[in-house]
Amino acid sequence: MANDKIKVQLVKGLAGTRAEHRATVRGLGLKRLHHMVELTDTPEVRGMLDKVKYLVRLVK
Image 1 (cartoon, helix red, strand yellow):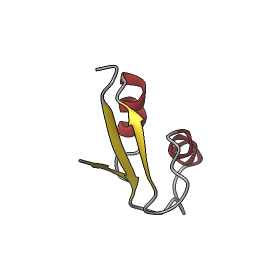
Image 2 (tube, helix red, strand yellow):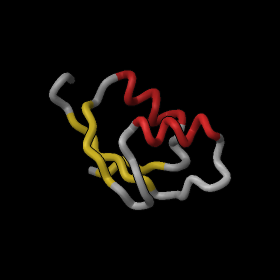
Image 3 (cartoon, one colour):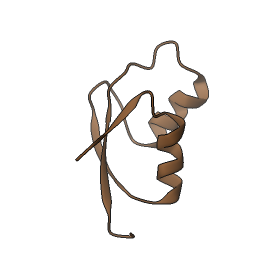
């Protein structure tokens, strides 16, 4: 699991969202709408994704 990677894309704008959720999205490295990042698949990252699952999409 240490070498597993997941791609995440921001698919919804951050306007009107909670400040805590905006900070989580920034912590994931997502900067703008439709921006995609590749992250290491860890329980910490999965927890962050679960928190903002309505804003992001996992890409295969």
